[in-house]
Image (tube, rainbow, N blue to C red; front, side, top):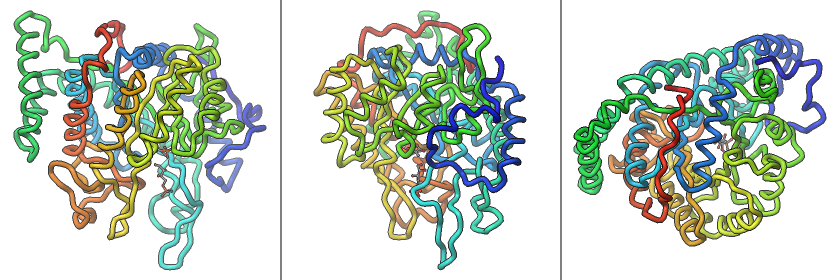
Length: 463
Ligand SMILES: O=C[C@H](O)[C@H](O)COP(=O)(O)O
Ligand SMILES: C=C(OP(=O)(O)O)C(=O)O
């Protein structure tokens, strides 16, 4: 793979780029991007193509996408235990959803690159003091000091190293004992027996038990199923970083972002004439776009034309994040118009970003019930229109944080301060995430199942 871009020939210079850091020293940034251009890719073109195939199955209604991870990864949290716990939580959720939907679940982490955040305001004020807002560890520090908040381009090199380390852990864990189906199911059994809502989940856990015993009896596993195909994704926000890691694939001659398998464009950067849409239109990875309540059918059709002009199966995923109170009203016209246009996209629900509220303590939080209700609304809309509710995109962690309220092991407003660790938006903790998987499994009915074709057994990227 050869480098696609050089700083002196910036192919995006003519397009306005929203949400970019105000780097104080352009020459320092150029030195960093030149170095990034020489570094090895994190992911390879054939892995991205494989994910595109998987997402094509999602778009056809033959698979379900589970995408999730931190709102904002931090350099401090690049640790073996945090990464393992995140991965095992996601795999536990996937087992429940796979069984309930009887379709393969495509597993994509919001990790190994989720270090930059778009923000609503450029500054943050505390006790009358105004400083630049925190934009993620890739850009500046979380500490509320002038020195820490100045954007520092050398952080892009740390982001690269942090992503390499995390990806290495993910590749190891998803190929090892931690990914064994029996082992994952045993963790789910422990969760069910310790959960206040366990009685509600008991029957599906028993059914999975029986299925595993059946597989064992037929000699088809689950011992054999000890590797998981797993992909990584992040918001492709920082264009200096992304373009420096874009490489031309030597076999196809096509450019790929090599910072992650799937990149998405956020709600704040999906301007049709902006640099993000332009950059995404030039790479060959599978890509996604977030759609909030302001998205019109016309703008979505134009995004499809820009990002998926060849109508390539699996190329484009639309991640809707309307809010529980709006999804039933705002989503149907989008689905109807997109379906009528003939485009075959994967529809995915992000039930987090439209449901953020401020707790009495001032913490940003989300109610578990709103998260669940937005997913229910998303399923209802697709079921009523005959389209496929293709997946969910969640912010979660494998740890017992107290950031979202509600759930089986209920977190109350007054608990938020005890373990609020997110540097940006609130995440579901481990038990809330598993609650969510069991509850969503109740919406996955026979109508979400196309004849289950196993995804072809090509060796996955991370296995
Ligand atoms: O994760 C999403 C955004 O970065 C986040 O919601 C922005 O938060 P803000 O409104 O506090 O800037
Ligand atoms: C910023 C994010 O979401 P959105 O663009 O939907 O606000 C995010 O997912 O981190």
